Structure formats: C-alpha cells, structure tokens
Image (tube, rainbow, N blue to C red; front, side, top):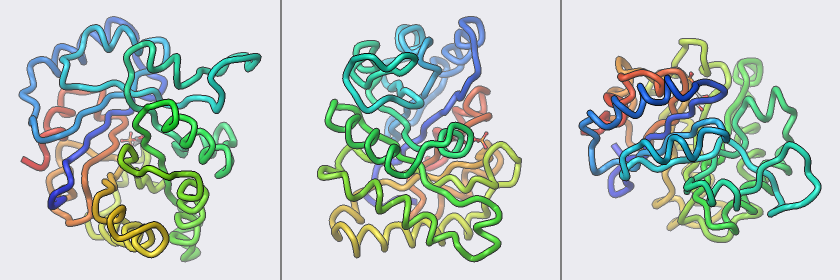
Length: 249
Ligand code: 13P
C-alpha cells in the first residue's frame, strides 16, 4: 500500500483493439465503479486515442504507448507528443520492453523521449525491467540502475513521472513476479532514487508493477509498501481491469 502516494493503474492495450472492442471496454469502464482515489490511465494504439478519449469517462485519462523526440518534421511514421496531446491524451509510456527489445530502442533514446514528452507537458511512465537471463545472472539491479540512470540524467521535474517496473520474463507469460519479488525491486528502485536524485523524489514518485497482473493477484501485490499501482497489459482489455483499478480499496 502506497502511504501518501496516490494509487496509479495504467492499462496498456498494446497493438490490440478496434472500434467495436473499444466500445466494450468503454462500457465496462463506465459501469465501474472506479475508485476515485486511484489515477486511472489507458493507453490505446495511437489511431484510437481520440476515439477512446471521446468514449471514456472523464476520470479515466488517456496515454500514448510511445512518442518521438521532436515536435514535428521529416520523421516518417513517427508521432510527436504534441499530436498525442492534441488528441486528448495526457500521458505517454516510454521505454516499454517491447519497444526496447523488439524495436531496438536504446536507453539513450528512451531517455530523450521521456525528457521531450515531459517538456511537452505530458505525464510520462518510463518502463524498466530485466530479462530472464539477466535475473538468472544476478544482474537485475545492474540493468535497472543503468536504465534508471539514463532517464534520471535527463529529468529535472519528477512530479509527472511514474516509474513502471516490468520484469520482461513476467510480461504476457502468465508468470507474475511474486509480491515479495516485486517489492524487493521496487524498494531498491526507491533507494536508488533517494541516493541518486533526492529523498523527496524517492518518497513521492510512484513505482508501479507490470507483468501478468490479473484480478486474482492484484490485491496481494497492492498490499506491498513500495508497489504504488500497476501497468496492466492483457487484463486491461477485460472487465477484470475494474477489479485491478480497485485493488487498493
Ligand atoms: P501483461 O499484463 O499482458 O503481462 O503485460 C504487461 C505489460 O507489458 C504492460 O505494459
């Protein structure tokens, strides 16, 4: 449970959905009920940001899943944070493991995207997390600290940053990190923030967990002191997302 940090639940729809299935998601989000003490954000594919924004209740914010490092120009196929804002989104996810490992995004590019999105006025959810072989080689915190350092070097104002810890081995695999495994990493990320940035930033910054979060495991995870919410993939497309939003109730 997050103390005085407001619980934050994000739904990352990834490359899923069409207008029909978004209508179904909007319907269960409208039915709720949604805990008013939780920040709720869903991230549709770019092309459905406006459609989702138009349908969703006002207390559900909308995020992009990615964005580029420039406001406009000759960058075919890229989307600027200003365009995302123009469609009604208020957040963006950066450095998701699928961007890092499928699209080959470097720590430096993720950090630049994070900085530019913040400068553009969006809230940002930078993602960090280790692969299975890195965990097995005891490199979990080396990897996360490296990813965190690249981002932290570029951030001045942390008030609109929510860090997502997403162990790559737990994403879409049905293998959730146990509450103890997740808490251990969250606590270390918070300690890293305290040592590297400031005690105040460490205390206030929300660190959310992602990786096979479901209705059935969210409550146990939410009880942990340093788990301040979730970034949910598959289950954010289903009615059980409401249960996850309300996990800290
Ligand atoms: P799953 O919840 O489907 O494992 O995905 C997690 C994730 O990657 C959220 O960004």
